[in-house]
Length: 157
Image 1 (cartoon, rainbow, N blue to C red):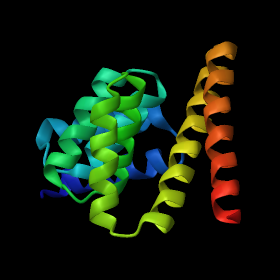
Image 2: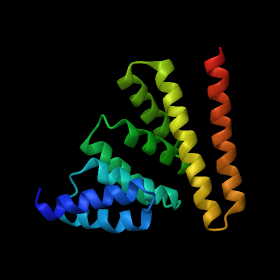
Image 3: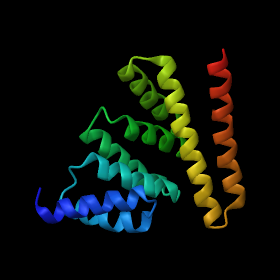
Image 4: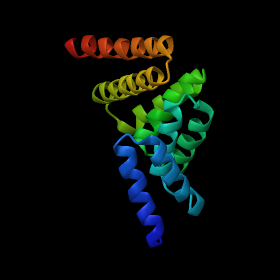
């Protein structure tokens, strides 16, 4: 990797981690112009696009991330959520089953996955609120709360 690409990648990750998604998208897009061989770049871009409800574009990035790194659990989780949002329920179930099989630990992983997905729904709710989508935010928050309640009752059992 050349120095310029390294700099762009570091800058893009920094913006992403700070939640500066517009900036991150711009910089990570420049990385993709040079090479599309970084699974984490696709995962970050997919997450950004998903947070804007551009599920089709997010799906492409998550699929590419998983293609580049089949064991990338976070990208697989993101892909499963995105499939669900696209009403591709069977594809979502297949991805989730793939993750579960790869992890080899059902109880611990289920909690991790549900928590991660609940957080994604909460993030999406915040994004909807930022653009005035109160009703959409409520729907996403209800999904997050339902997952959290499921976690509480599962761990108490």
